[in-house]
Image (cartoon, rainbow, N blue to C red; front, top):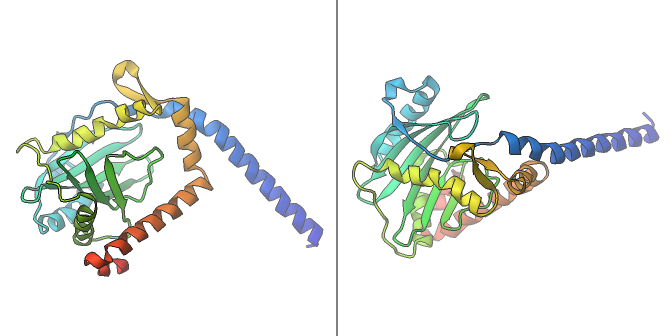
Length: 264
């Protein structure tokens, strides 16, 4: 192959790539704006373990004993319904009544697959919250300033993540008291978090309430910014920045006794 022909093919490739990216940036926001829905209300229904979908039951059965061994009590397994279009959300919810820590195992069923992650969460007297999870999917919208979220998808054992979670509490909570929930109403803490998602994004101009108040839809601002953040190369840069930030968090905790987690 001649150098001239090789150069021509290389230039053609990048022209096609540029066209694809350009169309994605133009058509992507249009498609997202008119298809995205997020439920305004969450009404979790407690489900016996034997009645869960098989793939969800398999995930929960593997994690429940691990969290019980850490001192958590199982509040229940819940079907949270279709929060976003083409999804079904299930959660196993836990509480450590001594420390007022909460834990959850989330399973999300989509037409393509079933994804899952586990999380530890603690809320404090000033309203601030620390969440530590293994969710590798980065949000496409701005973070909630009242919540410190750290994501470590490379940590596969709940015990290791729980250790990190408490070091992060020492770092960010400033000695404040962890807040509990009334006995028997623990799941309402999760409901408040999920039902605040739409209103919070409405306040920053990303969503508006539609369908008679049943769902939130995206504004043009929300659709454009979410699409662009999800496209290459922005998506790649965001993942790299997130990984570097989390590696920095772990390094900052080494002096607090979390040295072994560098190998997690």
